[in-house]
Length: 204
Image (cartoon, rainbow, N blue to C red; front, side, top):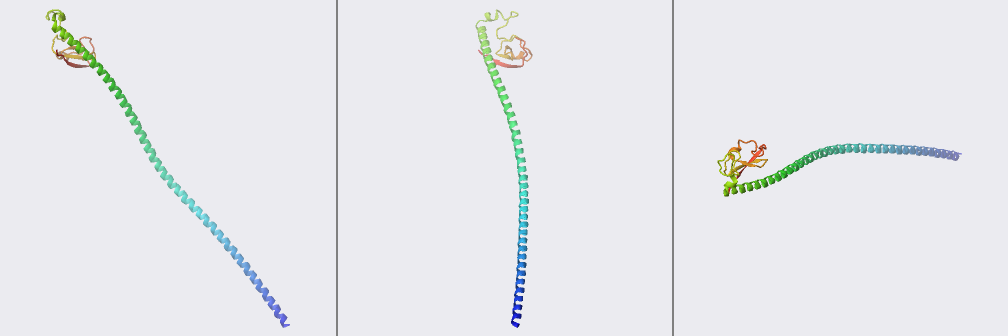
């Protein structure tokens, strides 16, 4: 009887132990699950915090890069504007230089024509003067004192026959002496307005 009682006690004790063990196991499993859930939650929060930090850092970096790019673009636009302005100035200078070059070429051609005309005129005057020296009668038509008569190549204003003659421009007539030229406004031959004059030394 006593042995049966002890067996019942042992059985009850074993049941109690098994019950406590099951309770502990359930409690540990619950704690393990809670720990796992906590870890997952913290991990998710950490990942979210890292993503948010990376996003903010990326946005900050982008803003900085945009600001620098804006400064660089502004500088480049200013440089392009200055270069364009300089290009316009150079093109304007080139046009002025081309116009001046054309003007100089035209003046050179005109001067060449003037020189050729002057040379021809001087040669003709020399030929007439030589003819007059060789044969005064045929050149002058007789005595120099006869009214209305003058020697070829003499001044059309005073009749002098010196070596120095003045050529009027633009008509290019070699028509008077240096003394009379200052008082003449129009050419004595063609009445063209005198704009300039050239002294010519005629020697034989």
